[in-house]
Image (cartoon, rainbow, N blue to C red; front, side, top):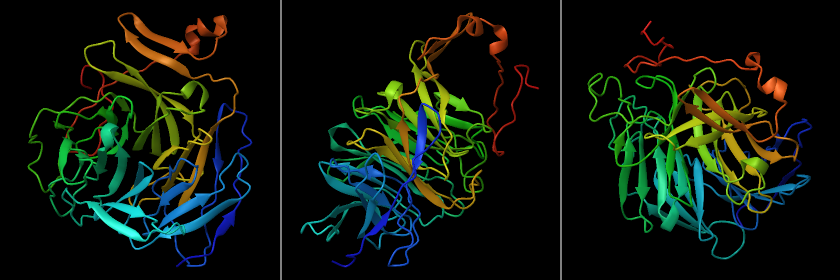
Amino acid sequence: KRWPQEVVNQGKLSNKDAAYVVDHIPLPLPNPWKRNIRPGDMQFFKDGTGIMPALDGDVWLAHGIDKSLKQVRWTRFTSGLHEPMTAAIRDGELYVFDRNGIWRLVDSDGNGEADVHELFSNAFAQTADMREFPSTLRLAPGGDFIIAKGGQQASTLGKHNGSVLRVSADGRSSEVLGYGFRQPSIGVNLRTGLITSSDQEGQYIPSTPLHIVRDHQFYGYLADGLQEREKYPAPIAKPLTWLPHAVNASAMSQVWLFDAKMGPLNDSMVHIAFNRPELFRVMFNDRGSVPQAAVVSVTSDFKYPPLNGSLNPVDGWLYIAGFQILGWGNALDTLAGLGRVRYTGKPVTLPRQVIPMDKGVLLQFEEKLDPKTATDPNSYSLASWHYVRTYKYGSPQYRANGE
């Protein structure tokens, strides 16, 4: 073995009195190889072994994760990748997305380290532009992969910057599912195939949206200075919802909580926010002619900036990794971290449904409410506003009359 040593540490369980809490797991720092660790994702094999790709070029394995987190053992699985940020598991095999493409990493001799590094797919364009991050890699029904690629071109107008693509199951071809994103991060429903993506406020993106991605639609972003200003190549797809910048300034990926042990959140979609660090529940509304969604906070008890994550199939809880990305800004100054969102069994006061209607908004909650409080108008506050899409950074909140 190249790296026979283990790094062993102990996690810290949350002592918060809440339905959903965040336990924090120390990264394998320091380590014998003096490697920095900026993790972009956390995925799991069926036995509960965690896989954590780090921007610094390594992939780490986490062993011994249990409820107590008393002894988490880290080993180094491989090194030398070009800024890997995300991973996926298919049929027990590990795939990692970096600046060169999608790698299939195989431990053929069972010694805990990768000895086969196959460039499984580079069937899509890639530039050296700083912000063309390999943002998200997710498995789709049927064995295809869905990837999201960063789109903030500063110097090079690439073919697939700011796109969400489907990569064929054999890795030989790809197709663009949506383009015109500034910084997309995705989620895939493995039961229905539904693909969603967030984006980040900036030029041409008036606030933080969540989208359904399909039909090669255009989602509104142009690279200022590299493309003609406000000359859109196609109609702009409408989002599921807008999140105010003050609530979610930097949006990340989405996770479907199937086969989870997350209480009332089971079988729903959650959305990860980078800044401010937070986890949101996304409630879909398909009653109208246009799909919509509402978003409510689950927890903001993160001590680090989260990016991507997944469910551990052994304990059914959600694990999220992340690190600071230069230029994005964050309410926290922690460089990186790994956390577990755990359901404690305490009462959940979150809404189950939020549905706009002709006479108001219908709210349905997970728990029975106090009738006096629930019927008191002073228990609620309501505001409405409009955004305007321009080449300028973000948008003010406008009244209906445009003021």
